[in-house]
Amino acid sequence: MNEIDEIKRRYEKREKNKSTFSTKGNLSFEINKNREREKRYEEIIKNRFSGTISDVKFLEIGAGDGKNINIFKSFGIKSENIWANELMPDRIETIKKRHNDIHIIEGNALELNNIGPFDIILQSLVFTSILDQRFKINLAQKIYELIKPNGIIIWYDFIYNNPLNPDVKGVNRKEIKVLFPGANITFCKVTLVPLLGRRLGRFYNFINILFPCLRTHVIAVIKKQE
Image 1 (cartoon, helix red, strand yellow):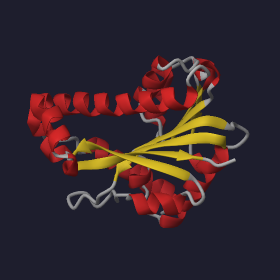
Image 2: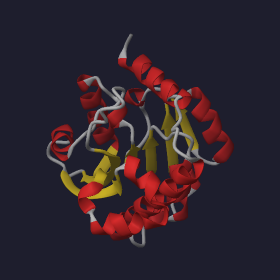
Image 3: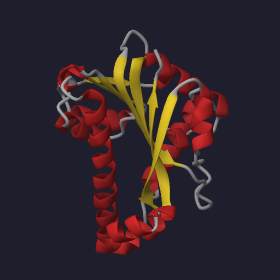
């Protein structure tokens, strides 16, 4: 079985094994996690593309059900300048229902050709689901090729292994630097460890500020040099 088939299997398994935590706890955690992430994204976009956002070309690989697309539309990126790539057919159908005004490409991201270059490429929780190192390296190279000089890759993913889930593998800062040699990379640590974050409710932000050492994910801005 090749890595693409393995990734599909992992995603399908994940769908079948939804979190057993309370719906209320999950909802609160997702709201707080997403607000923090979206605030960082907005800061990145404003700092890098102030005044030119309407001309920005954007691609998300592993776009899931398309929720991240809403965020970047809200920043002012035009629908006709947005591309979404997703491997799983059921998720593609969801994206089509939510965003019938963007470009949607189904399949392996390594086979993305005749598109771009892009000002922004987003990868969110994709690389930690790839366990084959060669595939991971090849995908990083593909993404880097699709970015314009001085364009950016926005990376959101976790940095630690999950001992309860052998189907994922954390990607730390050192590995990100290895995957994108020659790029200018900045990091921001975000997202409280989910097992704790789901139990904190309205105290999430307080603990997040007080104990940044409990954050398990990073947002990396990977800038392609000219």
